[in-house]
Image (cartoon, rainbow, N blue to C red; front, side, top):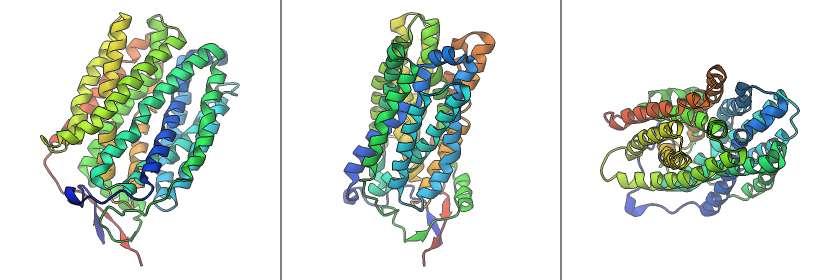
Amino acid sequence: MALQAPARPPFPAARLPPPAPGAGFAVAVLTAVNLLNYADRFITSAVKDLFKRDLHLSDTETSLPLSAFIVVYMITSPLFGSLGDRLPRKKILAAGAALWSAATGLAGLATGFWSLVISRALVGIGEAAYVSLCPSLFSDFYPPAKRNRILTLFYTAVPVGLALGYVAGGLIGHHLGWRAAFMICGFPGVFAAGLVLLIREPPRGIYDNSRPVSPPSWLEVLRSLVKNREYVLAVAGYTAVTFAGGAMGDWLPTYLSRSRGMNIGEAGSAMGITMIVGGLGGTLLGGFGADLLGRFTRRPYLALSALSTVAAALFAMLTIVLENRLAILTCMFFAQLFMWFYNAPINAVLINLVDGHSRARAFALAVLVTHMLGDALSPPIAGYIADLTGSVGLALTLTPVGLLVAALLWAVAWRAPEEAHATVAVSTAA
């Protein structure tokens, strides 16, 4: 049979079913672990110049450990997406959290370029397991009408975690060295993984009004998603903003240190503080504001994402060209604020377009594409531009350009004519 993707809530707003048992505990635990997940990601960016000196690396080489993480992360995401549509998700999530945390600490023992690259690549395996499956799990705890708000809460951990990584990595690196930064920041996640095992696993697709089915094949999922214009444009815009964020996240602290007179600790703290305040505010305003915008326009999630990303591009450009420290920090804050508006709304678009029996793979495919063409490319490209021109500021212009491309793609999706959503072909279970 062909199962229609649940593009809109199947329940009247006045009769929404309650969350599945254990939903609140799952959200709390997975959000806390997600914070540690993102804290581990950009420690390399906070202490870039420290290990560059000790390991005798070029600017391009200092970005390759981050690229190694992203490449492995994006390649293994479809594997975990496939496993997540068939096996208990909480066990995969717990294993992933333990692996990435141990691998983060292992980076502190690196003796050269390749040992650092390999340790960061292992982080990518663990985080792919976690990030690919969490939205799928939430979709079985909550009905469609509540998912955007739950994802808003979940994704508040992203800017907070990234900020923690910059601040902790920068300060620990400045005072104790870059090796200590990796080891100390990787330690907590090993213990947090145990909490994930206490989550109650909900049945799949209980809010999708569908009969029990056998999961569709990868080929069936791919055919369905390629035909779904809204999914394609949402992922394309996500890819462009990820490209922009990769360049900014990896190189802005170094730019502040080299070109604006800050030390490693100050640059990491500046990045972290503006991210935690702007990113947290942007995630909350974007998530809850998108629901309110639904009163005035169709596809409010795409509308808000497109408009806010234009503002983010403007402030990102001002961050690069201004020289006054207070002005730079102010523009950094507003760039982060508007840059995070899209986070929960776009992810809600993605999970609501797909049936529960293929949702993990659809999200994993989005992870693969956004990182393969996004932040797997932009940090080393920025590093190459910095090596070639001697200007990190010029390299950072990749950020506003990428943001404007994302805004254009999401605007096209927002204003496109209505069309029937693509279906995922599945076979009825015996």
